[in-house]
Image (cartoon, rainbow, N blue to C red; front, top):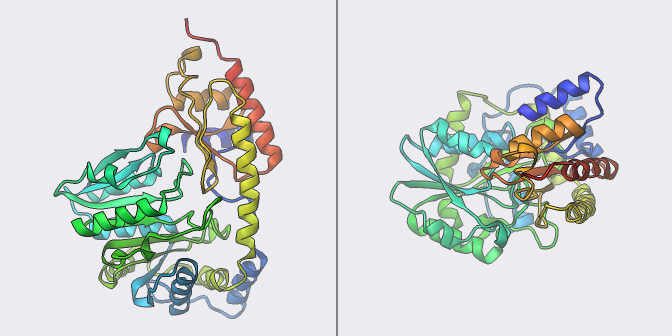
Length: 379
């Protein structure tokens, strides 16, 4: 947020800024979804709905998840929230008590850490290995289990690394957490943005009904970030607890956005494939271009729309000691926005969002190479 704030200041001053920071699609919301929102206004669908979302939308969520992943949830096992972040917040607040421990694989989406801290819980970070593609394994999880572990939060495909937990390994993790009585919160924000394999959900595995909680979002899949619609799927008792919490904070999500969400889930899905194809082309370009920069290494993302290059070999030049200093100096000298790895729990990386045009990607990566090549070697 500090980098984004500085970038906005530079833009106001007329600077030519290339922004690789934003974690949102650059595509417009598909026309059929927008039209559904317009119809909702024209038909005066502007009053309160049920706290946890209209029944029509809950059923649409359950049906779409069943069609995509082979699950079998009912509306009683579904809650609709004000975006994907909201459902993760609600689940953590409903389940984690002061002193409870929550496992968070590294690198992680920055919000997980703060949500656990806010609940009074304690974060237990599970380090993954970049040499192994940042893939989480059941063995890594098991090594950190204690009687105080209450939950595990996983995000696959991962923000920021684009790593995907392999299907067989994910099933082992589901089995392990179910046997130990640990809640598994699976953040499926990028679940359908997978490049070289079929999307799958941990909720479809045997035993999943006992302990898996799905945190879903329409934001990335349907380019609906501003509409703020997320959802949760899980055991009815947990969903009811989320309903109670939500009734005293936000109440229902926006009614108009709910009607648009129904159309997104029930309408044509062509736009998802079209956006994914564009992201794949951009991924291939970004990875190839980054690998041409001396001192930079990068893994090929398996999903989402982020590259997470390792700049460890560059640190130390010109006195740059961290990813945060690298990002600040890059913005200052070349007017390129990236997010430092410290936000995600790793020191030697930066996150580059390629949810932008090929022209911007070319301009920005040229500037990054020029910046790195211009850094003085340490004495």
